[in-house]
Image (cartoon, one colour):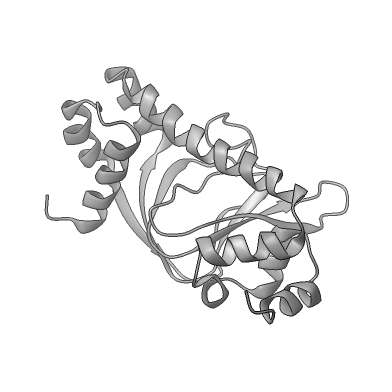
Length: 195
């Protein structure tokens, strides 16, 4: 395989499900596409159904939940290289999203139309295990995110900084503060405390 973006995606598939069918690996490459979007692009809008599965080869995206009554937006997730950005409900449930996904820097995706992926799942039933393992990974991350709120803000900030050392260069500070459910002032103060 010569395409480096596809190669990285297929490595991720094999990481999530090492027993993936070789036939699927060959056939999925016929269905994949690449697309580049500029910083600030919404790749999924509020109340829209996500029509493609996306994989970030290079770039950064955030999810902003939209309150249906006040339309207030809150950062609830972010993704970097080697991530599969999607909302819940959204891609897998085929329901309109309660959030939108916006790019924080120019981003290079590998994508597959949901209809094409469904067709491949019907042909290669073991792909269901791949899908469930990817969803399970992100479900565990969301549960850990919620569980971390039993800890003080300082601990949550330092854990985030350790997990994503360059995060302040890639996301806007107000989005990081919203994600951590603290004020920008509190985040700035904690950032200046030496560990």
